[in-house]
Length: 289
Image (cartoon, rainbow, N blue to C red; front, side):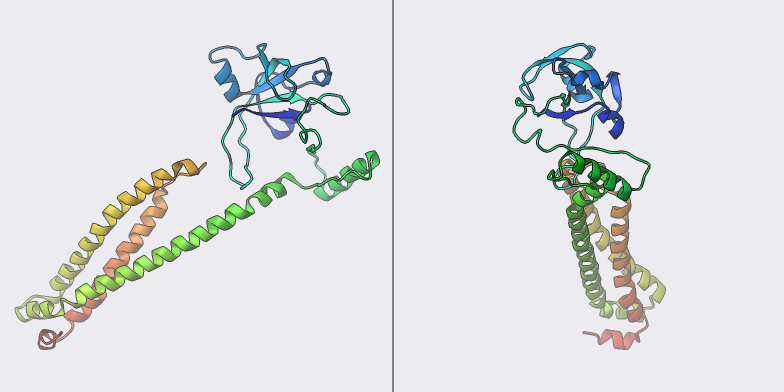
């Protein structure tokens, strides 16, 4: 897929898009007889691999089907899609907006909805008032929606941020349920060994050694679940790698914290009932059912 945009001179400087080769658009490129085009780095590498793209001639069906002369190569740009996520860096080209009242060769809708970018050291409210006044002087009936670029980006990110917060909440609830379940299972396993602990104590075993034996048994059970669980989590994370941008599918810090929390839950689940059992009189422990 190759994207395209109709822009005016100063577009690249306004958005900070670097011109890697050649030049950007100049006012003379807006003449009807001029057919200048700027291509992105990705498109230049695809069409002119190992060659100088500046000076090459191209023909695109949109917007006019004319033969264009490449005057510059711009840096690749990543755009936000409708869901607020940073999309792919698709190859694209730029055509200069002509000095015409209307472009009949441009697809319907492409020239009716124009975006104007204004950079000013003034306050945004003052800039908005000034721009609205200029638009009203041209045509009072002309509708215009004015906002800052950061506000538009934040508006696009509302839904993704809500989804991320919701997923984080579900993930936290899952982790809490896992901790509770692990604590309950290991606590039941250790409690069922109360009679065994009483026998060992009656035969002369020290409470400290019994406590260490029971805790180590719980740690082994916890590790037996953590190791394959981590392997499965890593495999699943690799499947979602293509859906993420700018972040790693596996965060070592978060994964380590979750594993440590489960391990601590296992230690606590073993330590508390084992310590309670070692403090019970051996005769009472032997009678435990």
